[in-house]
Length: 353
Image 1 (cartoon, helix red, strand yellow):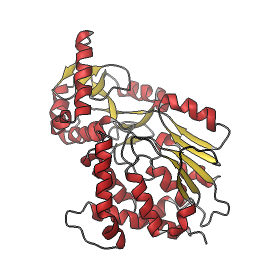
Image 2: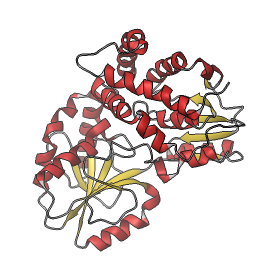
Image 3: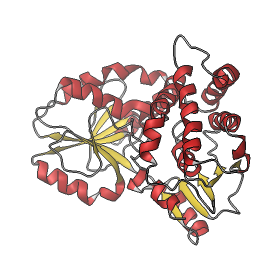
């Protein structure tokens, strides 16, 4: 018999409980998941770090902590309150996962299973160590889901598709999955708008928005809008807690490469030993580079952001800014369950299949 919505929520709530206790410095064996999977999950995290130099333990733990806060009964119940209790005809939903961040595709899996559908997963090669262990834990909690989850090499027999990738890969996705109900996501960037009266505390929080996950996420701030007379040294000072980023070989190589390229091409830039600031109107910036643009009028910034709305994932700013996906300083990398990628409601899509 299929699990009810409340039972499906209970499964993920127990997984969230495991995540929270896993990161507890004084763990307590409050359930069989923790006793059976703590060491196995630790090995998976170590393998992820060995396989992908961007997935160091700090970044993986940050992702796990975020899901630990979201996978709670109250939060899941509120998020899914519009879903029907039962799905009479579950569909097979193919999920093409991105691999730029640890567990970046987990939200889609969560939405599919809570909606009562079946998930066929095409995992990214850069992020394929953590999710299999989580799937094992879900099956421990809900053996009924054995026929509802599968890791597959190709999505040949699916009824609908949720695919995330680069701008180039979206053309491939449209070609192969355009005849099926789909959500297809490409690359996006995030920006921040700094006001003349911004506090030092807000700038320190902005550092998290820029550097968490090494700036690789679509919610990572890659572009700053700065008042004409604002002292950039205030920003550099607030970023200093992240100065050890260059110790990561992959990040350090990016920093050295772009610094050399800008110097050889006589492109003006500012730097502080671990990040490069380049004045540019472009939203996207390479790893270890942040673009900035001076502004005289907040109204003009709002107009420019509206013009680029389809390229923006979120905008970090205070309440002075009018933008539909505005988040507060320090919140870019802490999305809620209803903060959908590209602003497309995944639960609504799944509920309509």
